Amino acid sequence: MRRRGRGIRTALVLGLLLLGGCQQQQQQQEELPRVRLWALAPPEVTPPGGEGPAPLRFAIALTISPQQGYQLYGDLAEALGDKIGRPVHLIFRRTFSEVTDLVRSRQAELAHLCSRGYFQGRADFGLTAVAVPQVGGRPTYPAYVIVSRESDIASPRELEGRIFAFADPPCAPVPVPLEGRGQRPEAFFGRKLSITSHDRAVRAVAEGLADGALVDGLVYGRLAVTDPALTAKTKVIEATAPYLNPPIAAHPGLDPALRESLRRALLTLHEEPAGRTVLSRLGIERFVAPPREAGEGGR
Image (cartoon, rainbow, N blue to C red; front, side):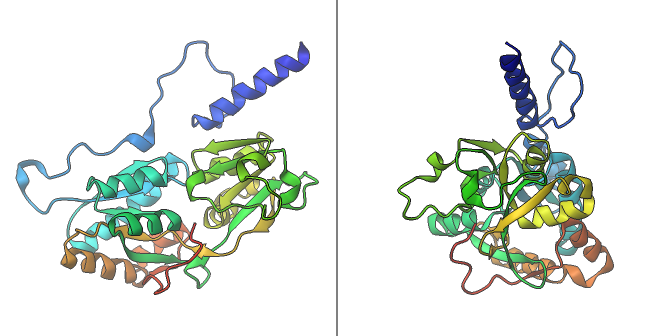
């Protein structure tokens, strides 16, 4: 009975994490109202009375927690709006797939996508890359397979049969080489957890709720600066091959003049002190033009 009780408590804690709560505290018997921050967006798409240019709708998939996302991307939206002369309206969603669907249906003109989602959107409906973040002097970056700092696991193959966490699995590369083993990735892990953001995937490993996780290298690097106590509880056991950093992409039907204005705004954002501050908070050095060969093996 004791063992069963411990299992139930663990499941409850895991459920709280996946639903957005990472605080380990006594919960009241009465369930508190829950607000899904990623589903919130300003209700007006055009200014009251039709005065001024219509806002540009910019869709974001939150690879970090909603609270951080609103602050960081809100600063980016304000900086872009100032440079292009029109307001930028942010729309947050939990996954890159949802963001792609918003652009596909013209509910957003601009999006920050994982590279695999971008390539799929380009093939499906002509999605166009406007700019790509540069980090460490490169427009590409690996993802990391992480485990607990206290773990004896030294390679991804040792995660077979273990609990493994993904943030936005459709955009994740396969971290374990399974070729020739006759085994599907779905069958490799004992259990796969889909977690709403990369920082929470790191926390799941740090708190012992998952044995390993695949996390965005850019997010992990930013966490090492903003929350070093958290990343200190984990370690990287493998890096994937570099893939295209998440590009900012536009619907093919976006006015060419506006797309060019956005391109110039993004590519020159680092030239101004305020713009450099915004980029630094996002862990980005600058935006660069998309590579001509925009990444085979994108995320």
